Length: 606
Image (cartoon, rainbow, N blue to C red; front, side, top):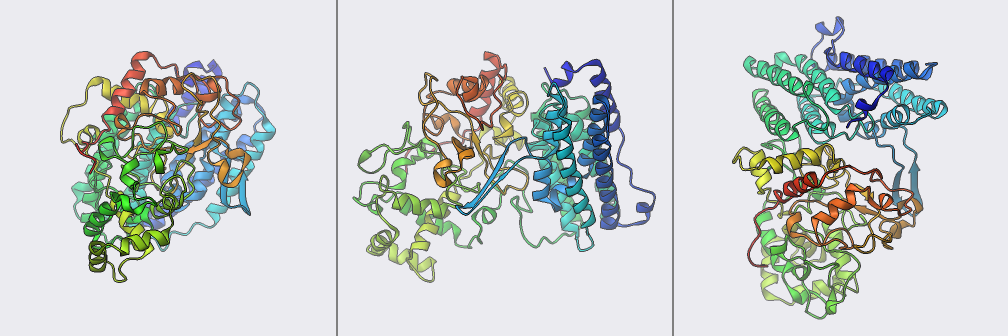
């Protein structure tokens, strides 16, 4: 049951007012009709920011609870109208203004650790609509922050240098943001107004797109956009949060809109200066051609990447690279197990257990931080850590380089690919290139999303819809990667504090403090990176400590509210502590869906 169904009669009237607002398209001012493209976009956007600021200030000046709620809903409406532009040109500010009601910790190094108390629309929504007694002083502090930050943004907005490709990028970003965050409840935690807010975004996109009507050489393509957006809004308007068919929405609308986007790029003869996280010619969200490897690797991808990957694979399987010639990367990352090892925690040199579970390497290249504690920023850094770790390779990069140089075959291959031959950096780059190639996007779910087959069962589709909605799984495991790398910008791989138990009996909290051990930041105790659930059918046991052997155990853990739901004391748990109230049938449906994310596994471990 959504929160709206439990509102008082008075609050229901406000909710009705909100629904009335979303039925009205954002109308540009009369003057903007005489302006072109980004001039009109800027004028409309600034007016939307102005309106947001106005109703935030009205909220602060409201004397009673009804007026506070009403003004919040109107302010949020205008904020969502501005979202397509704001979320693109002010990425970091947007994340702050729309962030979750959770303490944010930024750790650059031991001398630069910031602890940021959230002041966002989500904070306001939770305080206004879930707290029994509204804390006006706190609300006023948050409102002041939001209004001041939006005023600063408004006063510094200048889109005069923006080009066609900027608009196309922000259009695509907004489409992807709505599908991967907007319809999941990510930014409407108390009211679950995701469907209504998504309508606001699409109506706003429709008006922004109208400013670029003259850019279309094929006028029928512009009409096709108008019709598609109208159909999208119609589907959203019929949607209830818990029963909305997100599978069909993404397949029928998000994927189709990305197809229209590609047609528009060609129609406009657009030349993109570079790629963002999503390739400029990506056919959709669920393809091996979707993501830019260079974006995630933070360096250009060489033309010889296939031969480099083949060389990296040789190194990956070479046991001679460890101290006692007994351990290779593949010893702990077996191809037939989705590059995991089936162990509770990994087995290092001399078969000695290491501290944490071995994660899959599938899709590992499509994230922005590595290891369960996010301690390195790229795969090359992860390789260095494994080589130097006394419980793993028990070696160092100089010894690694010496061993590789002693092999004539390696010398010949490195010389044919790299100008400077065998170096520590080139060895790491070759292995990393191979790991980055492990992103096939060839699961049953991917093929169904691409329309190559229609083989998903009703249970599997129900499971996806629960995953994306009622069960709130997708608020941490974001599609299409289903890891913690946040779309649509894919700039950050998130960590969460779940309260994972030490044993499957669920009696005590695990003693591994996770991210805390890097910088000793108290508020980071028990924080771990959100891994991908792609190929989860092959990667048991689960969690950072391998505590659970089955997906049924994992679902039960989440269903009861994680560690706090089990009675553990965990001050900064990010997982909601309330039960999800998922039935056994619903939990089985989610498991059935997760198994559709399995890529075909090789039969051998090479």
